[in-house]
Length: 102
Image (cartoon, rainbow, N blue to C red; front, side, top):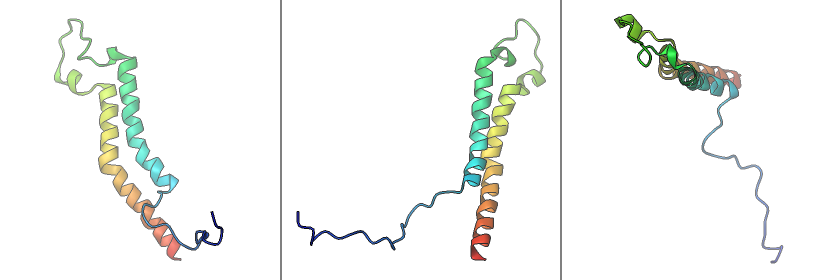
């Protein structure tokens, strides 16, 4: 191979494409899914907490079916993931852009 033909890659070129998210935005985005996983692990580790699975002859009211702790944790994780986190990430990116413009 002839070294006169080979050239170096210019280091001035910027990569175009996907930019990495800052760690704060990533942390906010991971809170919801981690909460969902926590609720699922809790429901597997303590299945007696889910009354639907283990009612042992008790009469169950609507409250017993709707308000079960592990399922509520999963619901909170879903709400955070789809309703709260996108707005927080947008705010974090706006602050980053404002700070970089200064």
